[in-house]
Image (cartoon, rainbow, N blue to C red; front, side, top):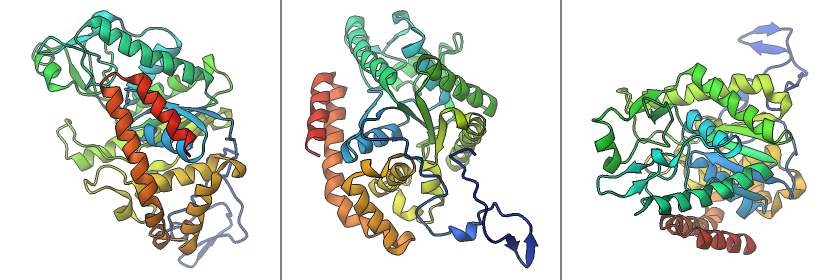
Length: 378
């Protein structure tokens, strides 16, 4: 039995519109419509207080690391200054950390004002010299390399399929280059758009998993598709159509892969489904209708804790969330969480912005000190 898809034989056979089938493994939409939690996912209990997590991928990876560390007190870190929205850039980064360099310093960008930018790290960061850029990047990579090698679990959040890359080397940039780089590169044919198809995504996801397991045979990998919608598309399609295609391709690819490797330490966590199909979408998105609200993130992470974290390691905040969600057993129960989350989330959001601001200015040591103090205060 694959743990992410529990197969339970039920007392009653499958029935629909007066028809009865002699089949007892099923789940009807009518049985979960309007319910926020829980989904039909086994409570694996594979995470304890001593577990170590490394999170990377889209911006949702930061939410995972923050919840694990700040709410549950579990050691968790993310790939600083590096958000990977597509499977190609994730694979490139994993290989860079574990197999060896995937790029050299001659591939760094020069902006239209002569400053230096990194194609494979934070696309906002600018350095006055190549040496400064190199020192900044090597510190980030050193921490990420140590964290991924020490991790018991690697969580990878998958954002989309649209990529920008070098047309000659096919190396994938973290995102579309910023205008101070793009407006010079694109006219010269040094950057191209590429939308990853199903086969490419499946291959990338498989190679990510196999590369991690080659270097860390006991490390378990958890893939999840980020519920955050695309801010824009350059595909020529409507942004809603492009978002749905992108998420669907990723979900199908990771679904097939986990069906294949699910008994060998590969998992899929359903954060995308919690937001899309919980029956309370109006609660779970911010005003921009793109990003997931604090309440949505908290509901997703509560479900993550239920599925993977041992009961003894879930902590008091989990119990409060559980009581609110089970109070009505449906969407209405979510409203009871709102007063409880407001103050705590405001504090956490202020911390996150402070850390990001410090890192933007290259003050990584101060950022890490703030994170450590945040954990100590919880």
